Length: 186
Picture 1 (cartoon, helix red, strand yellow):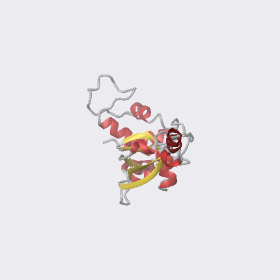
Picture 2: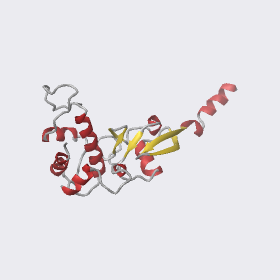
Picture 3: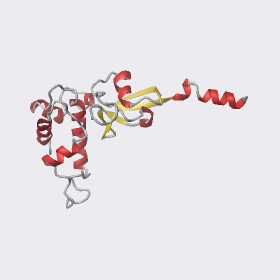
Picture 4: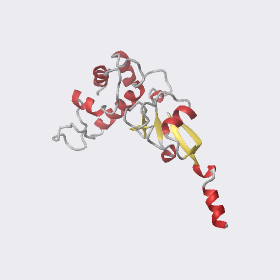
C-alpha cells in the first residue's frame, strides 16, 4: 500500500514541475516550470519575448536561435529546467537597456538583410554567436587547418556562410545576411 501511494505521488502534476531561475536579457526570472517545457515556449508564452520564432520545432531551421551563456542554441530543443541559473539573451536583449541597436542588428537594417523577417531574429542571434565563436578561436568545418589553435579565426565569406548554415531563410536573403555579418567583423 505504501509503495502505491509513493508511486501515485511521483505521478502527481507537482512532481513534473520545478522552480527555475533564468537571467533573461539581464533580468532574473524565477518560474515554476513543467519539466517538458522547452526554452522557446517559456520565452514566448511565459515571458512575452516573441522575437525567437517557432519554425520547425525540430532544431533544423534556426528561427528559434538565442544565446545561452553567450553560445548560440536552438531554443526549441532545450528543456528550460536544464538551464537553471543560465544567462539567456534573445534578439530583444541584444541592444541592452538603451535604444541603440546591437551592431549586428544595425548591419542587418543597413544591408536590408531580410525580406519577410521571420527568420531574422534567429539569424541575428546566430551571427552574434558565430562572431564570438570565431573570435574565441573555435574552428568550423571550412576553417583552414593551418589556423593556429586558439587564435581568432579569420571570417571570410565562406567561413561566414558555413557558420550560419544552420539558419534557414525561406526568402533567400543569404547574400545580404553575409554582407551584414562582414560589415561588423572587427
